[in-house]
Image (cartoon, rainbow, N blue to C red; front, side, top):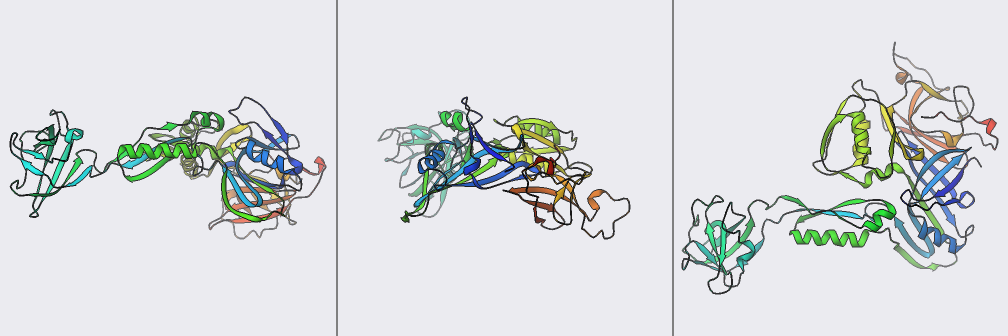
Amino acid sequence: MIYNLHIHSHPLRSTDCHVDITPVAGRWQRSTRAIGGYWLGSFVMSEEDVSLLDLQNFYNTYMGNTIQEVSYGKTTWEGIFYEFRLMQQGKEYRRSLTPELWHNRVKTAYTFPDVLDDEAGGAYVYNPVANSFQDASQDFSEWDDGGAGDATYSISVENADGTRAWGFLGVAFTTTNPNDSITILSDQERANAGWNGDTTVAVATYEIHNVLLSGAGQETDWAINTASANEYGTMEYIVTLGGAAPEAADAMRDAHLAEYAWPRSRKMGGGGGGGKRPTTLEVQVAGYWATLNWLYREDVRTDTASGMVSNLLVSSEFITASRISDNPMRVRADSTIPQRIGDLIEDVILSGDLDGNIWQGGVYEDRQFIYEQAPTTVAYYERADGVIVNLGRVPVIPTHLKAGFLLADESSPTGIQPPASSVWDDPSVAYVDEVKFIAPDTLQYHIVDAGEGIMVVVRQLESSKFGQFASAGEY
């Protein structure tokens, strides 16, 4: 076998572990992308190869740990355990680090309610204080603004005859019951007191509004489960509500945090009838790029493209900048609406540069981020038999091939090539933006064209001898 799979500890945990799971990790496959780097992977463990106790222990223990693929002494893929699905006795259980099922730093975005109170009845009161409003069953102290400065609350009244009146609330006072009355002011500056409508008829209904906040977007403070964040890293999540009172928004935030702060085991369905089938554990892993979208950006920034990438990476708990090539093109990250950091970095990469060149970037071994222009020279050739070789015509080690290179097809018809064109215009050359390795020896690569792109399947030569392969070039 040309690779080994090793488990290491989570980056935030001080204790180290090193477990080789190669013999029991069946159907291993993983991919790399030109935008993203090490991307996704998966394997399956079965009770036929591992005891039930060991499967359950794996499910309970390794969430968030680091997994490495090592091939001929080199780390050729790296990520974290992202999701487990345990199937036993016809039932399925799931643990996941996806944002919808796990988040340990939460706030609520909501719309401040247009109507704070909606009541029927009440009466206008002219004595002992003129230009006031009374409802014997209401306590108006909550909307008492102290009698100074601009009004905070307003009242709108629908009279029994269909006419309407409105004004701004001032100071609450007692007529019959505590604070059952409140003075009415005609405008926020309080220059004149009084109603703007007919005050001589009976009241049918009235509503109380916040002058400045009614219908305005609001956010609660962040709340965090520190223990979970210390164990797995910080996953931020914004709960969205429609019209809600501030206390309701706080309650929703706190309920989410209590429910989702830990990647707990969840029963997904099924039950009974599966006792004779072996227990299996499906494992999904993700490259460390995925952790960039655990955090939000909530401000606006304009910078060079390379400066923006560097600035956004500073927020990451796990990833450091390794090689950030200079790109002076100005870009803007407008996060007046919160956006996830990975999405913002992807937008910068997709912007290219002022000369129209394609750029690429991703997270690779040792959680290092690389940002650079896409290559302008051919790095590999695909022979007529489908084997990918390097410039020396030696087959590459399939585990060592990373996305983000130019591939020339030796069997391709040349067609008509424009004069003085770049290698990107050569009809026999394609830009490979995704590579998938499927154990033991299959490669799939995705090439970019004018349409949707295509996925090509090739099979590299099987070998246990290093000499029959050449290592793919490094970034």
